[in-house]
Length: 484
Image (tube, rainbow, N blue to C red):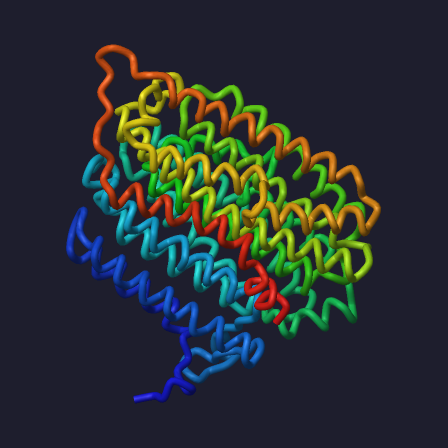
């Protein structure tokens, strides 16, 4: 039996979710909840062990089966990858507990949730650990297919239409990425990141510049960056609430992570200030347009879905704030962008969980008919408001820390216009959060019933919302890990 020092959690972070997902599939429709929760608890322990190892010993690689690249597959982990793995485990475990209660109350769409969720988590972990461009493509495709399956699982016309729209977007995005990979392979004869990075730096051929454009376009589409967000609101707003939470909190972070990784490492010699400013402008458009559309929604989950469109915009403000600026400003921008990804994952999972709880309570997805829930399901409503604190960027939340770092980067680099965008975005976020909260306090209309919400749903959502606040109070640990 290996000693604790010799134990390597890297391959197990991929194998474990694959194992319980396969077991859940074998058990049959609707089965596998307890197995999934136990597996995700073990995965959280593995992610914590790996983060400790990275903090203590730095970045490292694992040759799968003892066969390293180019003959085999290498897995690599550094501080950024370890943070993404931790984010996945910390968010997925409460969502699984929430989903068990949710599908007991509303079984529709839950028949194959557990195996698909397991394959989705395995694909996420494999993507964060991948060390070459082709395996990144494979994991992107697996992730997209699992997400599409979860979106369309309800089986009705709206769910299938949303799933097909999602499938089109994910295939187009992956196709653009694969074309970029093909160009790089043709120019340099390798797909390994460790081989390509010095080759691109030594010979930044036109093929590499075109590859950069294709990768950026593909990942912008898969992340649903404005104006490529057409697929996100129907998918996130129409799916079952546990699915919406997974998609918004975790899945869109995968394509953002990939773009950030390649922008800062492989394509660093090629990126330009003008390209970074364009991404920033699209991010600003997402913040303003997504917030404006969230304000006019009448359905609760569609409001939360358009809020996701808006919050994605903050992630892309990182690029102009980290490109062509001083090292201090660039470091603050990267820290702020990554902190925004982490805090958004916790807060948005909590907000979708709370929205699902309110829908179970009143029996419908209608903001105007939320009257009376403040006194009947106060914890669920408090969860929604607490998640809103993080999205608005109020202290002491992780959202405040993220936006503060981005603001500091903007001021340090002299790009004050992004400060205006972030302040306006925070005010708009407050407006759509309070739009929901003010509807919850008037008494219910005559004849309206407020149903009991399972405790597992209420407390798991609350735990996620509290996590978004704690991230702001204890953000030094994640930032220290990011620096490795």
